[in-house]
Length: 170
Image 1 (cartoon, rainbow, N blue to C red):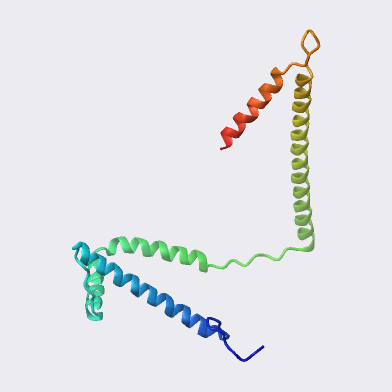
Image 2: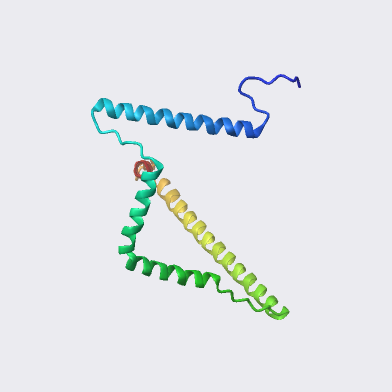
């Protein structure tokens, strides 16, 4: 590999990440400028930029207002403490003996086996039902007229059913 670095390639992942962040910040600032210019063009009020001191005063004012809403906050904090208590409370589980563990494993195996058997039964029922439907259609397709010609009514009905099914899906 040559010692040349092609334009747009980064060999240092930190440098790549720094460039990505820088690019996104520049993009955001450009969008913000365009937005404010658009607001000025439309004649709407452009929000003023606040200093840190003004923002800190707002936070303090919000804190004073929040004291009046303290009753609602107390209820919330009580619920929070209760949930903390529930989470922090640790109840160690009792070690299972060998017999209990083996019994538990057997129960799980039997439950799994029964579930698998139930799935197999339902699948077999579905297959049997489909086979019956197929036989029924086959018999209706093989119907003949009095003169021995094949009857097309069941075939046309089948095609209509397929079309209705496709329309219902779409």
